Length: 319
Image (cartoon, rainbow, N blue to C red; front, side, top):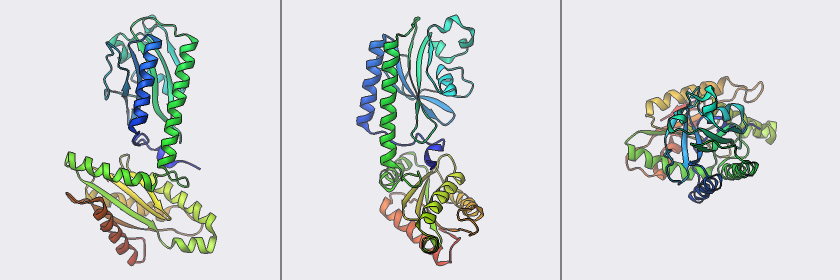
């Protein structure tokens, strides 16, 4: 089964718990100390950029958290790691012309050791790497230690992924929805930007289970989830709340813009082959969040909008 949510460019949108972040910080500080380097970093894919996600607390470390470089054709060491999907060691970049345009060289970071960090559902979270201003032929012990630390980070990501995702569809689950809706509302209010949501379900889904069996119903849910993901924008966040009920958070999106996405989604669902030789449609409620509105009240308004759409016999959008 394809884990749809982690194939999106937003696949790094999961919040990492504070206790895990503290452990990762300790990992970087230990690696920097035993490797005797100026910087140990965890780099994160962020759209088309590579971002310094975490940085060792070492003296004269020039890398600050949040600093970004464009990923494609950047000349970064980490770009090479992610393109080849394996370890990269550069003992002294000054000895090779291929690194002359590397942005890391503006800090005179001549040596590098990095490993890719993979996401559970495919693709890359980013890299873990060591950099320094002097030549370093990193020992096998350092390489082994780095690899083990990378494996620990990937295991952390797997546990976070499993706790936050729906096992059938690969979308985010209700537990994560309860956390994410609150944080997105708070962010929207802080930045004074609109946020809209969609609630939708499959029309006459019970008939699919009753006439074709629950296996066919499960397959329909997986294909339905895939169609949702393929229809959304990079910033949209999809959840399966339970049964055939789905929810889409749309940060920085007005009602009118959300309705455009909803219309495209409904058309894609109608034209897809979710059930072979049997057209499938969806009912959708679309509601923009109001200032100072609680998540509970917003959810009720979305539920009411979905109910209005279903009263019109399906394949409808209500607001």
